[in-house]
Length: 324
Image 1: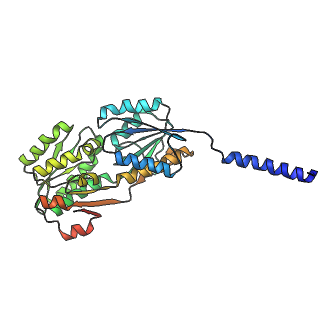
Image 2: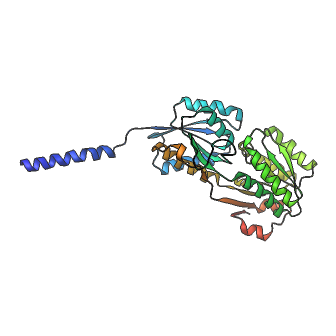
Image 3: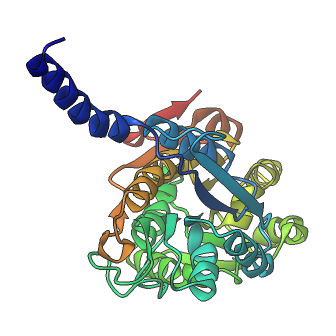
């Protein structure tokens, strides 16, 4: 090999080394802390994991997901959150107002992504959706508007309904704005809103009995992790007492009459995108809270027939999904 060829080969080799090194994996293994607030988020967690896989993360290779469960017991949230933080996670992921509050109280330094939240500003999680300004970002939906819309939809499904109850968990401090919105809509429709507090599954049967005694025409299940966990049981009790009811998408699929709600697995998938941005260097203080851009109306015709209700064609035509 002559001198010119040698120098050309050497130069090519030197140029190739940084490029090859740059293409090599850094060996970094990211650690995500996942707080399971309740038992009703299995589909959401699966969507979150799939979203991370789609973005190039692989559990056991460059990703470890540490999961701890509160099982719908909000008093356990501080402990499970602190336990994950002690594992030195790179990002903490949670959902709901109780989950977000526990994370906010536990850390001001570790980035937090709240997968699903009703109203981040009203709940005191961030001062601004556009500029969260701290270590927390995530996705939210228009919780008060959705709860108010459920009043309208139940009234359409059962014309003449004048007493509509709402089940809520008083331990969830984020429910207040939704209740106010429901009461405002109810006044316009000349509907009485009956509040039914549910503190745990042991209250469910008594609550449904109270609805019958108070001659409620229908009821709404408030968006709450604990209530979501027991959604199917609530739907079954409602059917036994011949009461139309509304809740989220999973509630309608479990036997409730209708749902008007966000696609929760889709919001969990979007949370994976926020985690990815943070791991790549984005500051959560500068990541605006995302808004759910799709609200689905689901009608369970099987339940409607069992209740002896005829759903108006105008309502059926607006449904995103009809369960036969």
